[in-house]
Image 1 (cartoon, helix red, strand yellow):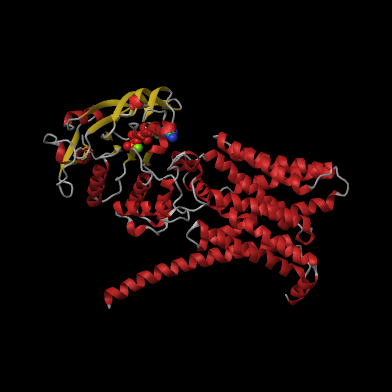
Image 2 (tube, rainbow over the protein chains, first blue to last red; image 1 turned 90 degrees about the horizontal axis):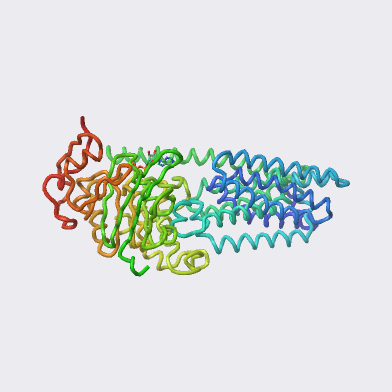
Length: 288
Length: 278
Ligand SMILES: Nc1ncnc2c1ncn2[C@@H]1O[C@H](COP(=O)(O)OP(=O)(O)OP(=O)(O)O)[C@@H](O)[C@H]1O
Ligand SMILES: [Mg+2]
């Protein structure tokens, strides 16, 4: 740990990695809770994986892979949203197909691009230590988009995730906001790809929010806490992986998984103990 | 719009089927402004389906329905609705006040109705209205309770408040008191009767005897409208509706000092509950 702190003060790349983690955590907090409470983890997974098509194509044609990722993510979000809204049956099969097709397209493009192996690995598993300053600005812009959208339409997003039938009766354009929510998920996925890679994105998107959900009672509190947990996980993972020279993305995800397990077990334990105490104190009142 | 402003609901030759199964056949129903209509009928008779047609959540295969003189989808923000079953996950992290506030979405005109005004949050006025309405349905103390922690009857009162805060012109209630104890059921119908002075109400209930002392018309639905009349319901009509002899249990419902509703004949007026027997 001391070694990490020492290195942090001297190496600009570590400072940038830390900032990248913070920027990704904003997405954890703003969008993760919606994914968790609306139970669209599978959809989000589909969006995340089909991003590879866009990154591969951008690489092949010589564009910035992150721009390609953003375009592919938004397209995948709209496509998956459309499938979800218009197909009554078998939608999960269709989403699974989009998931795989996106990855297949991406791998074909990447394999036809010279020097693909390292690129592919960093797309899939992220490389937080190699985030250039330019990309930090890109991430900050995406955060701004998320922040503005959620701040402007917080009530509409809550309404459609809570009870879309009632939201529709109140005149909220439910389909529009549903698609917008999926686009925000797409933006968040792109935000996190640098940090943990697209295979592991889904864990960083949902686990902090799920942990926060176990300890909070309102969506707003859940968002704040998920953001904080995101910061802890990304900086913690970075620090832990530095000295033994482990890949950072998987370290962050393992940390997230461990936190989720501990949180689930202790939340369950505390709830049971509270209930036992309540009954016992009732008995004491009656007897005493 | 002007000429039809008195007609709140106008359904003509309405037929509806889910898939191949016909649910409603040739339903004709007019509801005037200021009415308090009770909708009764056996299970699976199509009551909830008819309400969803009024709300524009379903579209009829045949016939025409107008709500406040317009197609249902254009009028729906002027309606309040309490569904028979809550259509949300009970474990959603939200408290009662914020559930009720959702009924304030779409209040107002133009763009602000769609997007809401204020940056993300609710205005103080919206909160005040929501709190006041919670008090009216005797759920003031539940304000900050998580929605998942409520009992069935508490939840129904909260959903009623959510329907009321939108300042509706027509209130559509699908068995709003099915889980509510007898004292509160009486008080909620007293509240509805008071609200009825400036809004129209359609309420589905299985408690024919009880509602007949509050509503001013009863419509009976079993695939099609069997009756819609002002008089009290007599035993014979109920038999036609349910298709078998029905025993009416006579016992009073809480205090019996409500004045609202048409004065009705003897018999059904004091009946509570109708149970098939045979
Ligand atoms: N979403 C649906 N898909 C297919 N059939 C449906 C659907 N909803 C209702 N039905 C059928 O339509 C019929 C009428 O249902 P509806 O809910 O309107 O009855 P109801 O009069 O409200 O009954 P209850 O008193 O039990 O609430 C039933 O036979 C039911 O099986
Ligand atoms: Mg029903």
